Image 1 (cartoon, rainbow, N blue to C red):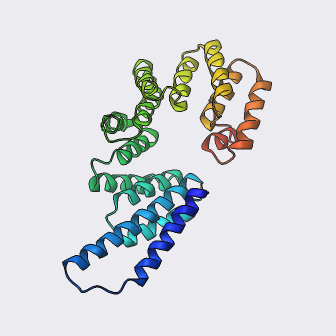
Image 2: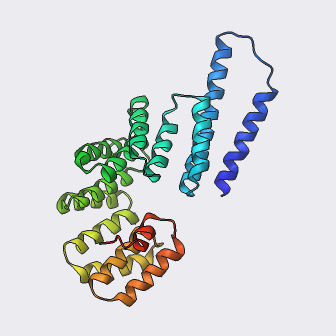
Image 3: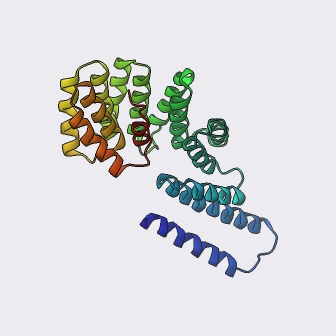
Length: 261
């Protein structure tokens, strides 16, 4: 919330200052100044859109993206956020177009490549190899601040197609960068679960939940493990936590709709 308010404050200051500046003479410097103002406006609206997306306020996120693209129609990060929003809305065709535009506009932007790879992994299983390629380009970018995210995403995606050895390599690589990175830890436990090593999976997950903040992914995996071990009471406890703390997550929705495996 504080970050949203800070971005709003910056935007208001930016708009106020822009309004107070006298209209410059129409020369080269004027065009440069106008371009910079448009860029800053697009950037701020995109950051707001991303914040609203993470808060689940997708309608407001769409409004902010529209404002960003009104300021600068070729602003790649805005299309990146738009892709994430449309992905959340299950508008896969729109999301695909958004991500492809973003990649064309900014082919070296590792955050965009990572998100596009995640989208392909989740929605187009037949394009998994392409998704892994995008993750690797992002992860190996020395300027990318969170390469562990791309390595973990690659591991989770390999896990989806039951390539356990490849998945383990990617997940351990993520942990070599960020030793307590929860998505990678959950992914390794999921490998044990899918391989039928239920006792090991449960032991590791209990330790994870005791020492880390719960996430929808970790709680869903806990439910699945307990159900596989025949302990419905323990599973119900995790279901309660999932519905209480993450009611709008896709994991909570899947449990309510009976879609967990």
